[in-house]
Length: 88
Image (cartoon, rainbow, N blue to C red; front, side, top):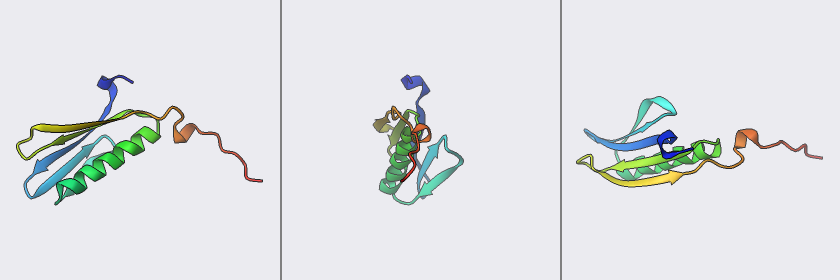
């Protein structure tokens, strides 16, 4: 995938805390701690990568300036496509 097709997960400030916006859910996640919001955003990006999708985490500060980005590349063999081996 190219950067234009990355799934973007953003951490943005809101009144009283931080919001995580992701393509996984229409409902934004809310956190009091910016660190917790960032942790959740990275966790969501790891899940996307594990299922074969490139993801990018975008972190904004209280002025909404972009202060950090992390790229998560799709796994070559996504979990959904791994062969299941029977246990003997």
